[in-house]
Amino acid sequence: MGVTFDDTEKKFVFDFEHDGADDMGLSIQRAVDSAHKEINLYHFDIVIMPKNRTKVNQYMLRYIYRFNQPKLCSVEEILSKPMDEELSSMIRQQNVLVIDDVTTSGSTLNEVLRTLRILNEDNEITIFSLIGRNDLMAESM
Image (cartoon, rainbow, N blue to C red; front, side):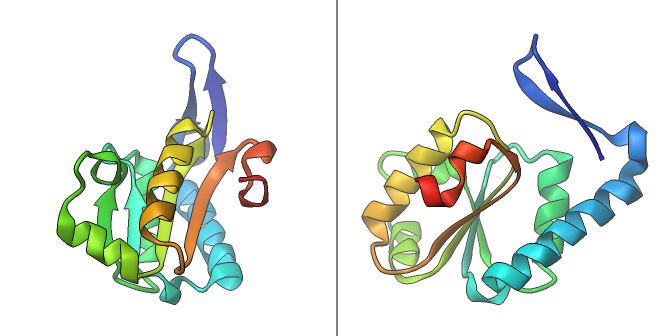
């Protein structure tokens, strides 16, 4: 899959014309399958992702749903003040998977993790991003 960084827009651009949607889907499916081997996607009850879903995020979610049908909520719901009480209760009791196609600065991700960790001290919180900087890997957070 062709991926470039647009310096003017300050964002990653996925080149669907380069490899085609079928190749993109296959690449994402392989990434999700690889993640499943590492983290067991059956284990997660909630998936958090950006409200404005890119085509890549939509593919990621589709392939994750092959393993499990977790509750889906948005990053914006997690960061809303005050958070919906039902969602807050679910986060306290369940394992959470945060997915995104690209992690750039990590600032939004850090806010999401800070909020989730306050609510969920004991359950698993895992991040799955297709593209990101090495210094933003989970071990460094």
